[in-house]
Image 1 (cartoon, rainbow, N blue to C red):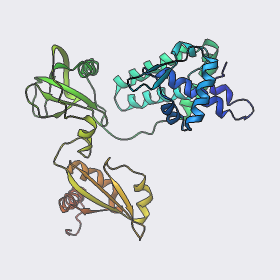
Image 2 (image 1 turned 45 degrees about the vertical axis):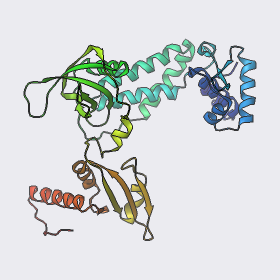
Image 3 (image 1 turned 60 degrees about the vertical axis):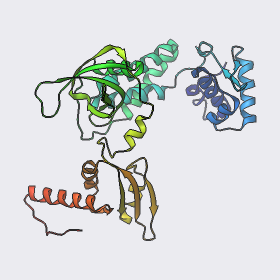
Image 4 (image 1 turned 90 degrees about the vertical axis):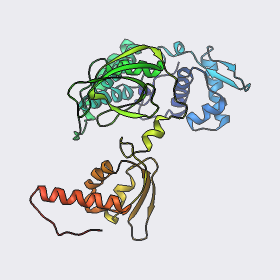
Length: 348
């Protein structure tokens, strides 16, 4: 029987790489519905095919339940029933602590629904642990959670109406129409809309990507402005040309506008920090001879872009486009005037 990784690491500093890899492979084989081929096992573990074969053979000798089926390409896909690992593989305490810490972080951002789901996942992991292992792990979990604090960052704390997110998730999974009462920025009373929901974008306030029934144009709907959401007993035909990740990547943040080509230059002093920053999924970076860093990407949402780039101060210069430079200069002027300090007028 294989000992759990946490206990292995406590045996006088001894190294148990092969045993830990066997445990990782056992978890992967039990966590997949369709099974893994030998090549997929090798990729998951970062080893060669021959090593994956030996590990598969070792697991088969330990777990007679390990079996395979051939797929349409006549490749053998191996799978281990999850029941075979009960009492053998315990969830690592670091995993449980990380989930519970993430739940606290979501709650701090006002995302109480996601915090609840994460805590349910942590509770499920605790439930499958043996009582003696759970008793030993409790102290470690508490210590890890205390050691991993959450830095407080300014930002919106959206209040989402109870029941809205679970309803939207069911509608998205079942491709069902949903009727929402939505309060726009200029309206006092929520308006009723029948939506075709495609996905939810988290970060900041949280947004639903959906279009009105009968109108194909996709829009973003603020989750905290949805007063209520109810499923309708009707489905909708999902647009085949829509991809949520691609849709989100078109913008800087969430606002959808015509994309523009952006070129930023960071000073040599700020280059190391900026090089570790993701400004946009499409970005590419280049170190210049003088040590500065050039960042290029294509995205829409100029005003949100301007507001964010303002935080870099004089460590960053907008090379292109000119409209973004002007937006940033006007923002600097407005802030200076607001605080009673007029700067010399200059334009790029």
